[in-house]
Amino acid sequence: MNNSNVTDSSTPRVSRAASIVAVAIALGSLCLTAPASAQVVTSSINSNFNGTAIAAGRYIWFNAVFSYSGPTATNVVIRCENQTITFTANAVNYTLNLPDSKITLSTSTSASQATTVFDAMNNNWLTTAPISVSGNVFLGGLSYLVPVNFPGGINPVTWKGDFSADTPNVSLNWKWGAAVYTTFSGDHTQLGAKPLDVSTSQYMNSDHAGTPESFKSFVTGGARGGGGSNFTGSYSGTANVNLTFAVAVESTAWQRIKELYR
Image (tube, rainbow, N blue to C red; front, side):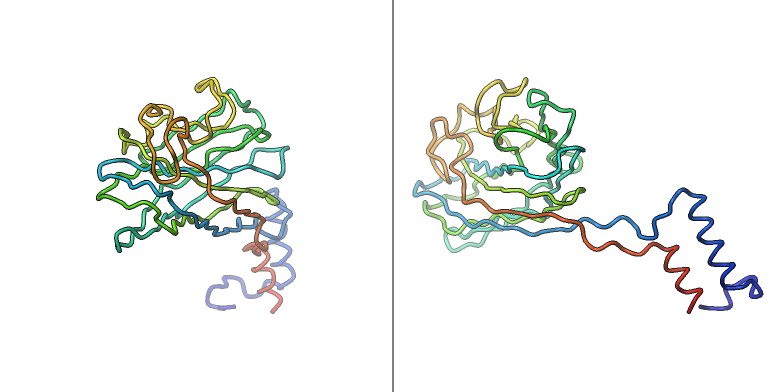
């Protein structure tokens, strides 16, 4: 310990330690470890586009969904950040950066009350859904304006993201799709992304989670979809993500007590 920072060098070490503990107790915190930091798990899924070429000027709606398994007694917040989609077309490498996603699984929200909105200021998808729900929940998505003619059969197409949760023992199964639209919007606030597979008060239908309800009539073949009523495109394979807490970090008070006894 640097003695130049000690104002009363005559104070016994035990007394100083006791004082620190007393302050911690007075503050209502008997725990000598700080809350653990959430573990971040990076997960990726490789898939491919079908054989339909995609003309320049059309949009690809990349969308991902997940199913949840874990605690249900309290709200759970799930995040997916640093998301990218990578592929090669016409010998050119593409890396698409996606908005972050925050999903709140709520004990007080029913399926009919589920919502998805896009926070344009923070470039973030915000979904609120019931913690116990049948089917999939919208994870996130990207509206991508095709810059040049893309050939069919692009392979691989890889979606990657960093997953975390504010609650331990959370398990997610996620997958992604991609559909092509002749008319669409690059403004994610205008898409009307459906939050769940099941019917909600806002979207009373059985469309897949992630369906862009505002533009359904403009879907066409390409990417992973065949048009018609396939608004999200066919899904990739599924990846499992298990989220736990990292080892707890020692609190400042506990570090100080150890210093006093060195």
